[in-house]
Length: 95
Image (cartoon, rainbow, N blue to C red; front, side, top):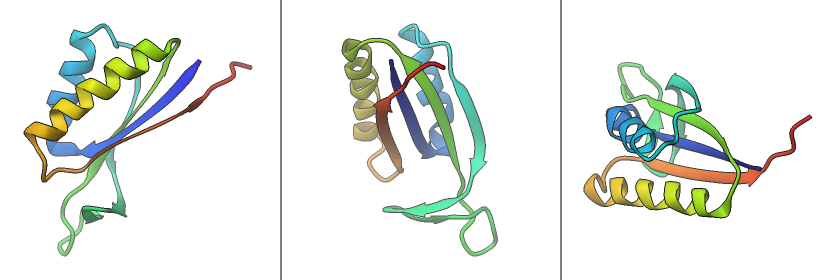
């Protein structure tokens, strides 16, 4: 199995979730208003750095599913190049 973390500016939330669910990726865990700093600067939800991120975690079974999710997120990045959106994948073992 493959785990995927998708971290993105919360302004992209509807588009990210809608694109995933429209392609059948309906099982996920979502964290809202995640704070942090990355390539697009700090997102701390305060007066100085007001932006925040959201994060999704999905577990999928195949490389083709991973490539489909990657393609969906790359399309969003092309539409919104100034907004942060990152994917991280790793192997998952069910216990």
